[in-house]
Image (tube, rainbow, N blue to C red; front, side):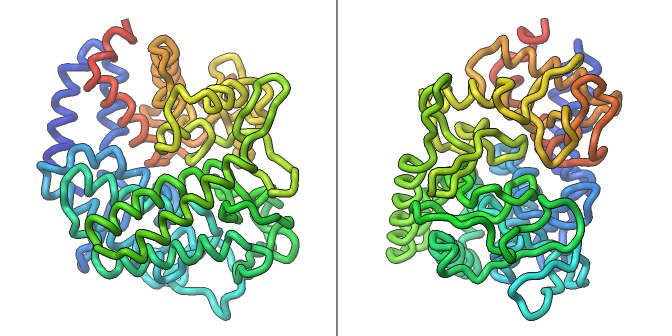
Length: 433
């Protein structure tokens, strides 16, 4: 599609700002508009469909993350604003179709990744995949809130939004008592074990914590333990957003109270059950827990992650528990942290061993307070594109030419967000000198 005028102005400005760095300039011009150029379709009904790249479906998570960097430019660009509003309206319609689904089709064509076994009598033709992930419901609320604060527009807060928001709160309440009350089941008969939920599709037993249960991680891999800490942190943040929207825009006192009360439950649960006392690192956040004394100590590359906690808005970059957590996850004690001949960083069980993700490298830079660390990461990102000019999902720490997903719009746009941020802060030239 045609690139909106605000994006064109950013790209034109980059010609001057990055003139001394031709490879970075070329990468920025390819990556920052990649979502709009290659994965965005305006629909006849006024909505927008944003697919993930090399997969034809629209993930609620990915599509939100893909447009987040553009929100800062939307105030004076009606064309860009229409795309973001159109995406949000489509997302909230999708949530009302099936709030447990993570990815949707462009039309009701019955396309899907796999014929999974769930509690539904028949698959919905709109649903591509039904892996339930807390963050799938967090992201549209986050984007709608950030868009409102940037532009002042309340057009997305219509009756569909109100119904979807109420449904999200209701679902998260049910999933506080997953074993007793949840209707959700998910079994996949093919693929690796991480593609299915064990125990007849219910997952391992969990105790009540106040947090809300998730079947899958943002990587689309099944959770080991049902309380996914970074996703509950994200839920806490967006419930605060929702409470504010309900109060200031919707004038819905009931929704405001329900969102605020659930946020308090989740926050208490994170503090009571999500902090692990590590003998070497001190108090740090676990990645997952079951509320019964078991923990997963790791971080995954995809967002929400423990690394991304300040980016999500849950805590400050200098929060002591976050800093302890950061030291752990950026060390070999994290089983998915890899160091090699060309790179080091966080990977994922979703991709091969010794593959690290560009998303996690960008997130490390976005959450750092150390300009030297940020400069090293920017140079690493430039040097690990595999000579394609694009970001990828994962790449091998010894050979960036070995990578997964040659067309991954989220990683491209997030890279563009980092570079634009550093340009706006007048830091990039000094870092590359």
